[in-house]
Every structure is written in C-alpha cells, then in structure tokens.
Amino acid sequence: MFKVLVIAYYFPPKGLSGVQRTLKFVKYMPKFNWQPTVLTSGLNAYYAYDYSLLKEVDESVVKIVRVSAKEINSLIPKKGTIKMPGEFLRKTLSFFSSFFFIPDNKKQWAKNALIEARKLLKEEQYDLIFVTGPPFSSFTIAAQLKKEFDVPLAIDYRDLWYGNHFAIYPTPYHKSRIKQLEYKVLKSADKIIVNNRRIKEKVMEYFPFVSHRDIIIIPHGFDQEDFEKSGTEPKTKDKLVLAHSGLFYEYITPKYFLNAFKTLVAERPDIASNIELVFIGVLRKSLLRQIRKLKLEPFIKISGYVSHIESVRKILSSDVLWMMIGEGRNSDSIAPSKVFEYIGTRKPIIGMIQDDSIIKTSLQEYKASYICDPYDEKAIKELLLKVYEDFRLNKLPQPDPEVVTRYRRDNLTEILGKELQFLVHVK
Image (cartoon, rainbow, N blue to C red; front, side):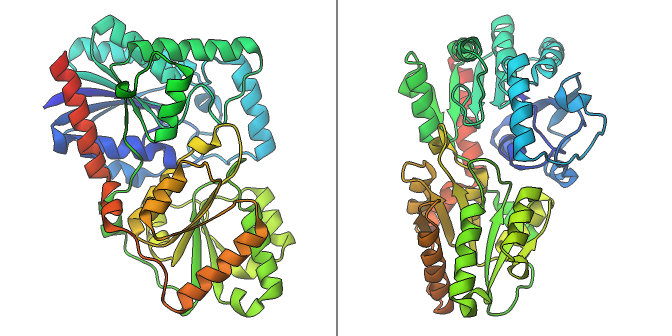
C-alpha cells in the first residue's frame, strides 16, 4: 500500500461538518490502496465532540497522531465541548484574531505539527503528503515539509483561502501577506484539490500561474453506510416535516424563512398547522428570540447538537429538507457539505439561494429540488404552499439516481486515490 501523511487540524472526535470530508477520505483510503497516518489536534476546547465518528476509522490500518499547542482552542480553560458565541462576539473575536495571527489563529499548532511531522517523515517512508484547510496554517507547514523531504504534496481546499467569505483583512499588509503565503504554497503543490468549480475559478483568477489541469474538483458527498445503519424515527402522521441540518451564521440564516412561515400561519393557518419545522443542530440565542417573537414555538422542534449518525436519522425521517445561502463576499463559492448529505437521502430539497450560487447547478441536476430567492419572503411563502400541495397529492419530485451515486463518499475517495497514485508514479 502507498503511505500518505494526512495533516488535518479538524478530525474526530471533533464534530460538525468540518471533519466529515477528511474523515470519509481517511475511512475509505485503505480500500483503494492507501494507508493513512493522520496528524491532527489534541482534545482541546471545541464547539462539538462526536466520539462515535472515531469508530468509523480502522485503527489497525489508520494511525492517528495528536499534537497540542498553545493556540486559541487549547488556551480556553474549559476543555471538551464549549458554547458557540453569538454573531457579534464571533465577528469581534475574528477581527482581533486576524490582526494578530497570520495566516490564522492555529499558527502555533501548525508549528508543533511541523515538528511532529518531521519525526514521522524521518521514521517512515511516506509516498505523499495530503493537507486540508482551513486552517490554512496547515498549508504553510505542508509546503515546508515538501521542500525538506521532497515528497509529493496534495492540498485540499474545503473553502477559499484568499478571499474567503469569513476572512477579515485589518490592513492592506494583512491582505497582501495572506495572498503571498498562498502563492508560495500553490507554487510548491503537486496537485490542488477543491470541492467545487467556483473555488477552482477563484484560485485561477487570483493566481494566474495555476492552470486548469493543476486543479481537480472532488465535491463533498455522503456516506451510504451512514444511511444504512442510522434507521429512521416515527413521524407525525399526515404532517409535512421540513428539516434543516447544521449551523446558521452571517450568510446562512433562517430569518427570512421564519418570516415567510409566519405569514403562512397568518394567511393559511389550516396549512401551517399541518407543517412541522425541525432544526437539527444548535440555534444561537438571537434565533431563539426571533422564534419566540414570531410565536412559532408550536410549529418548531429543535434537537440541539446531536451525533452525526443521529442527524442522518433525523433528515431521513423528514419529508423535505431545506438550506439557505445569502449574499456576501464570494458566498457564491459556498457549497455546504450538508447539501450532499441531503442528496444522499433522496428527499426533495428546498434551495433558498442566489442565482450565481455554485450549489444551484447541483440542485438542478439532482432534479428533486425547489429553488427560490433567499431574501424574497413572499416567494418563500408561495414555495412552501407549492411544496405542501405536492406533499398532500403525493407528487413530490424524484431525484436522478445517477446524480445521487456521483456523490457517494467511497466513489469520491476512489477518484482521489487514483489522482494521488498518479503523483507518486510521476515522482
């Protein structure tokens, strides 16, 4: 088997969507002739822990090396699960973090990870280094390892680096320095992997020396095994269950959806009484206040944070799933991993998205989708009426099975494995 050193700050037992892509790649790599060693963070403070995810990794094949450091998550006194801050506090902390830490606040962890990675590369013969970001401080140390050990390097973008929709550049220097660091990493990389076409286009726009063939697109996906072992929950008979899975933040908010539903309650209480809204995940206090202000509590169920397999069970138990991406800097490149898990359920999906959103193409190809403007509350209300009528008449749209198969995690890992093998053979 080929040996690959996987550098990933976010990895189980940390939870949330940031770990899923790397976890599933690592899970299926041995099936396609790759033996991974994962270099990741320690058990420090984080918003969610899901120890069940570790059971997916065969520890007889996959070696996990944990590195701790005096970075932001390790400095928080409380270890394990911590509360998620409100949007205002998040933005404030992000500003100060961006001012003092370049490229990001995981910089100290990256330094310690570099020391450990050097030991691993000296002790064993690795065929390739695979690094995923964010955090992008991981990219910088991977480039350094490539230079020192002359091992092929593949970098995986889960989001944009320069121009990221969350990025804050306090001064022109910060903006210039980030772009300079990314330039150096891209120059050293043997293969660039992105999860959607828009990120590929942006990278090529910002760094013209990167060619079309330097970048491959491997989208997010779903794990068929998760659906096979999760089962379903009993649902309220005759009620349309609309579910949303995941977190909300600046560009992804339920505000307009809830306002539209409130109008539906006022205009058609007979229909609204037959709709149940399910939120799978943590809702910030500001959203809970909005729900109370609109007096929508009788229509809503909030699960709070649950394990990944439990979230799969809940979306499988729903009738229709929905998601939203609003307008912001490069928000057109956002492709939430939950959308591809939605696709794995083969359930209809409501996409409240901009016309230029990269996710629009995936939903259109999927076919079992309803699409509307994320800010047009009247259009959202009318769409909810349409969905309810289709549900009542048993005419909800059906997905294209070939498109569903395209996003299976095992199939995507097979594509990744072949690309990585090519790099080794070239070397």
